[in-house]
Length: 159
Image 1 (spheres, rainbow, N blue to C red):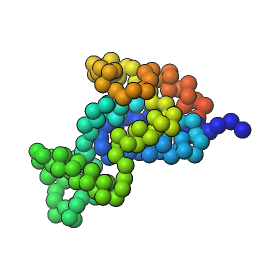
Image 2: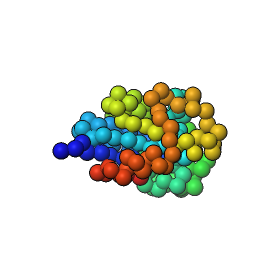
Image 3: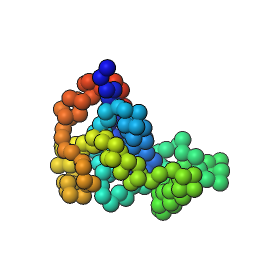
């Protein structure tokens, strides 16, 4: 029986959207799946050595607000300057208090578990990103590189 494969496309570069690809990839690797994550567009932020991702409460109506703010604080209020930083700090604090690993820890776990991480070369070029800003172990390739793997994968996820 051949090894199962999981292919993930990571397109988002916020704190909250960074967790799903790393949690799913590390879990799949622990279960014996050959796993690959293709990071493109804003998802490339998750590969930077100095990951400065934030939560974006704006346009995220499903985000639980602290202190029942969702009942009395208008969604438009999340656009107030400083709210993004405040919400990011609150989410990091909540995760730490619940024992949730940081994105950096989860990324390292994925690398240790031999999850292949591919940075979309087209997007790197498009946004004039410096490949030296990315963590060690990242590979670079295009959509064809992803399709080679995804075409034979048991599960493919777009996050």
